[in-house]
Length: 484
Image: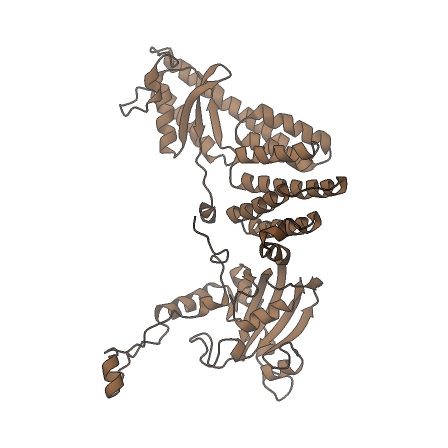
């Protein structure tokens, strides 16, 4: 399985850079001629123009509403209160954070909380970038409504921005004046960034994940890992859980799952010395299994949810979150009685929980709706059967083959089956539908054909000693989960 760069989906400052290009020479370069006599280059007139990319960028900026841009206008970039230039004035009231090199200057707008962001952390930020004498941002995650996520120390963004972010705390808002050597250099990045341009960034830290504990543990040789205390292992597991939570928040469920499973395996392979360690171990493990089950729920994998929630209940049988999530998983499978059983238990554990009671009301409504549809379906099917013979599905082996011959089912029955399966297909809270019916070969083949047209699978079998056909939706996961 190929590994996937966890940051490949994220925008970074280098998205603004044009791709590498050839020289733009019309006649090319011959190395032999270059060594003997030199050459004269004839440059294609438009070789270095922005071309289609520049036009796309102009069009992108036009799409922002004027009132949206107005919210991010910065008049400090236009003029100074004295005779100096705007950026010279800002530099005079900022602190140099590059040890006297004069490359990045900082001004705190809103102090943050907690400790400074640790080395190598994954940080989620919003920022606006401004050029001198331009009060509108040339780049803005806020206008895109998409925060930037970076791993410090990996050079994903320009050096000055990384230096600035590394100096911040959670929830802090600061301005950074970045000189050109720490920005886009002497050449700039035409057409957006002029040569030797300084950049003013206004940055807000939304969250960060500290990987230091996990990174340090991974670097240990195997013999040293065996000597690590449970408390240190729990710290590593917590770091993995926080990383998983960050991916979960970005709806990258496959990657969140990777971190949760890594932490679970680490904890489950550890040795416990006493009851105090056992309690710490249980608490950490339950959090991981609950988060993993919630991720499975988002992935529409109810059977995985059931497995992981039951693991939590083995550790603590009155865990409300696991009980409630288990009820949701059974509901997704269409197992109403099991879902109700765990909802009743969850209500007893947390009587004032409005979300649990809302789920119970939703389940009752779902059952009533299902029963109404089922009665209507059976009524029309039996009415049709009264006008023709039906075969015994349990003795006809041909039912297990999806025939291609024309189906001899009345339009009324076909419409009823189509309506029912379409409603099921559009119900995102259910993954499986069991139809406990004893009907004709033609009607079962009709169900198979309708399900196939809707992109669903069917299986035949027995449920509670009654012949049944199960309709199953495929797992439709977000693109990033396909790599898991």
